[in-house]
Image (cartoon, rainbow, N blue to C red; front, side):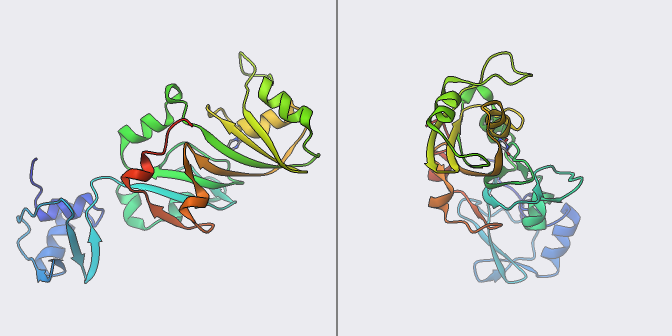
Length: 237
Ligand code: URA
C-alpha cells in the first residue's frame, strides 16, 4: 500500500490545505504517540494510527461513515435554502472532507440519516437496485385502520409514478404506523399516506436495513462513527 506523508495524512483528515498542514507540523502541533513530529515527510503506518493535533488525539480514518439522529427543522441539502443544514451539526473538518448525506430526509422528518465521504458507499447505498430498506414511524392525523395498513401493503397509486407503490406496514398505536420501504421516492411516505386517505403529521426514520436508531442510542442531534459491523447491517432486510 502506498505510504502517505504526514502532511498529506493531516490534509486527508480535514486539517486544512497541504500548506496549512505542513505549517502545523513544522510548528510542533502534531504528534504520534508521545512524540512531537516536525518532519512533514514522515510516512507513519496509517493502520490504527492515532495522531495528536494540539494535544487532541485523532484516529486516522480513510473514510468517514457517520450516523446522525436528525432533528426537525434541518435540511439535508449541502446548500440549505431555508433551514439550517445538517452538516452544521457536525465538526467543520467533516465538511472540508466533503462528507455528504446519503439520500435525503425532508426538513421536518427526524431520525436516522447516514453521511459519508466515500463516493462508492454513497452510490451503493442510494442505488435503487440494492433495495436497502428504510423503516419509518409515521404519526397520522386520522386513526390508523386495518384498511389503511392493507391499502399501503397492496399498493397505492401516486400521480407521477407509473405503478402503485407498496410498503410493508403495521399499526403501532391508534395514530402510529410503521412503514418499511425499499425505494426512496420523493416524499414517499407522506404521499402514500395521503393517497391512502390519511395524512402524516410527524415522520421519523427508525432504521436503515438492520441498523436501528435504537441500537445506536443517539439522542436527537447527536452523531456517531459507524464501524464495519454497523455498516454491514445497511442492506435490505
Ligand atoms: N418519506 C417522506 O415522505 N419523507 C421523508 O423524509 C422520507 C420518506
